View 1 (cartoon, one colour):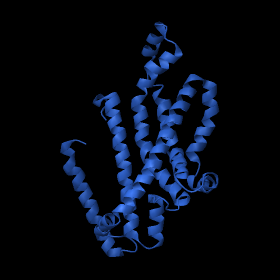
View 2 (cartoon, rainbow, N blue to C red):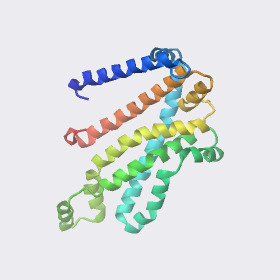
View 3 (spheres, one colour):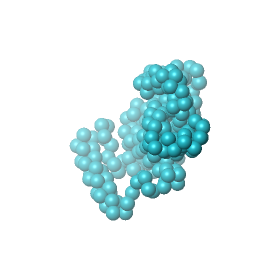
View 4 (cartoon, rainbow, N blue to C red):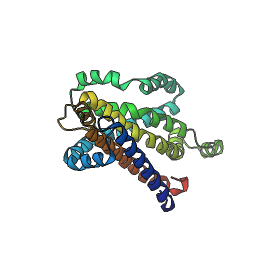
Length: 250
């Protein structure tokens, strides 16, 4: 973020916090905790939230890595073979539209309680943006560049690795930015059903706090989840700058 934009961002955040506080005072803490109560919960429950954030972050990152690998592989396979692309299409659409909440109980039966369920749901949630972005990016090179490669006798493998893979990076990173937040959401949804708080997770913390009328703790867990998503997104942005440079406007 540019330095000149910081005052605008901070001003918008301040207005939002004031509006939140005014609504919370009016409706009461059972419906909406005040921002100061959430901040207090972040401090007093910092050990639990830190452990939960680490566990959810590990599941989110593992799911994102798996989704990135399979998404890029499926896109490259689809580019290589039109038959493979047509064969993969219904499965990629199915992964996109499958309701994670509906299959999470079956994942618990197959995998048991623990990080595995959250990792799988994170991978399912974040797969399609990566696949779609990679598929689009592989088509990015202009016809002139493709003709030049083929004129010099480049094989399809060389065309894929040396031309299309690099041309696909801007689109791929755009998909990864979307997939990062979805991975965190997917992990938390998986933890709603697949976590028994051993170890603590953000998904279980939200459920536990909501059932116990601890709105401040539930919101604190949500804030921690938002920070986790922002942190993973910052890593993606750093990798984007390192690999394709600032010339792309990231």
